[in-house]
Image 1 (cartoon, rainbow, N blue to C red):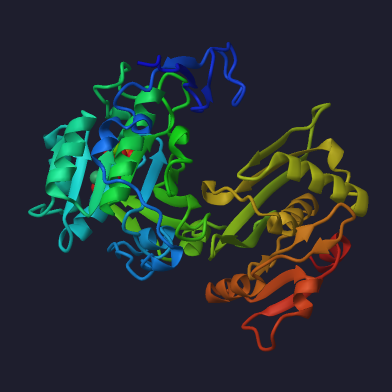
Image 2: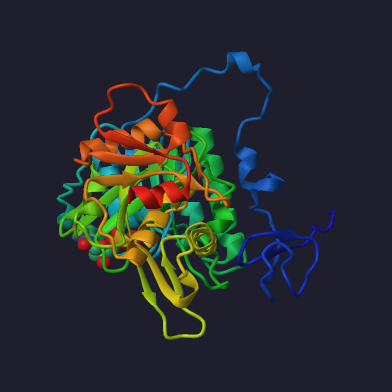
Length: 452
Ligand code: TYD
Ligand code: MG
């Protein structure tokens, strides 16, 4: 028998190497490569997969179009993030910090499907009592809701084969282990091989599957990053410490737009959908505070209004502080330089604190103008009109550039009672008549300063 080739796999990022090295060339981690022997159970070498039918190529035209067959979960925000419902045969990874609410979300979703479809919830980390307690809190009856406490992969595969669920939840993939692999559960080799076997089974059976993955920083436990390229959909469940709202974000989706978000609130008896996130993020705004400016952002296909706050104050330090929360600090440095050069604000002697209220993160450059307006207003101590929203990207010459989805943003602002929008001149020129809100075109940062 030919000697099996040995691999070395990085415990942090999952990169595969033919020989051992001290430093992972993919992620730069030191001493993270572990020896990895695919073994006889590996999907790559036949093994467990050899019981599957032989593959034959078929013409593309003969493949049935499964486009219309989405399964609707009873949670609208969840369907939205999945791209309009759950696709049969799809594999989704739900990753997030421990305690953020992954098990809660999946139990709610699965309970709503259990009425109509065979489902299975596999838990490798909780006792039956813990599951029962959660079910009671959520008001899940659970007659058609089979649960399996198991962390041996082979048993899970067998039960799935015998009971044939249409939707499977594995909570979590880090607790599964295969007998074929000489490593502890949670090791990168285990996580990868267990996921590969389950994914093959899901595709073969046309079963929708959710894998739960804990995000951990340390190299010993394989983070779910390892799985990101193996699955169809990667969802991150996020939340800020001290806030009750949770955001489900699709960072990769083969069946819908990426970056779509769903917003939830964690309550005493489960997660509740927040259908109007703008209202939530603006709820604590102090109207007319200097340095507070509202930005009409886009998250995926959905508009979200966010409050940008800044505090610009004379600094006693030789090197003034620049602190940003929820916004890129390089982008802040660029905007302060532009304000300095174009408007001569003298920011070099000031501390600058910039915060996106509610703990949200903005990655869009379309927020540049709103950030600039906020900095300017705080520096001059002007209180900005409470009915104003701002959109626009700022270039190095102080010019204001066009942004996408302007009409969607404006309509959302109007819906929440805003009556005026500062926007790029290029966008203004292409706007339709009779918008529900007054629009002011801005071509440069100087014009913004004048208008404020
Ligand atoms: P959980 O779903 O167990 O998190 P994960 O699976 O991501 O580790 O949720 C844990 C937290 O959520 C826990 O701190 C309690 C809280 N929680 C509620 O506030 N309300 C509820 O109805 C439930 C079930 C949990
Ligand atoms: Mg859990």
